[in-house]
Amino acid sequence: MFSFLAETMETTIKSWHETSSVGSIVYFLHDKEKAQTNKYPPFVNINRAFELPQTHRSCFSFLRQYAAESFSKAACLVTSKNIIAYPQVWKGQGSRKWKHAQNDGFFGQFEFPSLRKLWFISGSNENGNTVQGARRFGHWCS
Image (cartoon, rainbow, N blue to C red; front, side, top):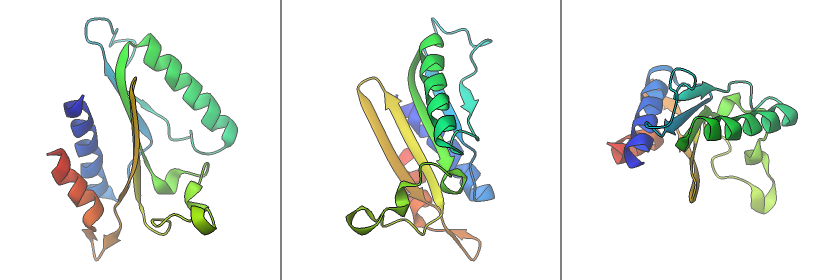
């Protein structure tokens, strides 16, 4: 599982370093003995999933079904913060105010039957150089 997560994040961080953006993609770790890889690719592009509440709900219902039908052991979603129109939880007020609200970057969400982790990687660019957040996570995955 760790190598799946590390490879996914390494790919994402490289994309961020090169373009300052990542698409909305869910990577799946299929059970190699059961999955029909010609029918179920190991990733799904979900760029429109964060446009509206209805699109968000239907996309995640689709992803649950896809994971079950493709015999996926785990999944990892990555998306740029600037792609997300819904839900924008970082716009909370008072005690819900998020400390990274002004930062560019991307979210990662790892799903495993007994574990769910969500994180934000700050990846702001200053003078063409990526700020520490993505760099530190890249070292952690190496």
